[in-house]
Image 1 (spheres, rainbow, N blue to C red):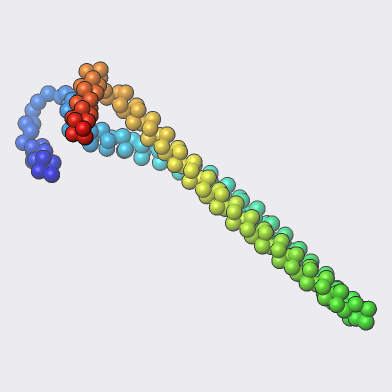
Image 2 (image 1 turned 90 degrees about the vertical axis):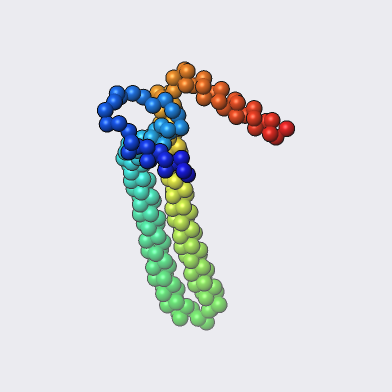
Length: 184
């Protein structure tokens, strides 16, 4: 933590005149590089992400509209079934002597089948909405991961020279060697 505060203190003591050059200290430039990469990803990825989300939103809204239309048709069927029920009840008054119990059974069967149909349509609508949401989330995650990976690879390829690359590899091999000695 002290090193971090010292680095900010030293920023104020830099001479105002000097030459422009590249800082090859990987530890000092890494936060700058990361902030640039994140800034570029946010700047360029925001539009793509918004477009993806808008497209998914439209698809989900269309699915919801379709489900609502199915629901309205089911309600219409329910109203038709109720009209048919009233008709059956009228006929029941006429044929009460011949089969009141049979007509009552028909009425319950109509109500139960219509109720089951409504429940199935409601379940289908909910499953479709959940599926579209999950698919949208997965596609957005995949797109963000691909863009971040491409940006990181591009940054690494543009920033690492052969000499710096070899020094980094040697330093990592040295760290792994000491870690192996410690674990042995």
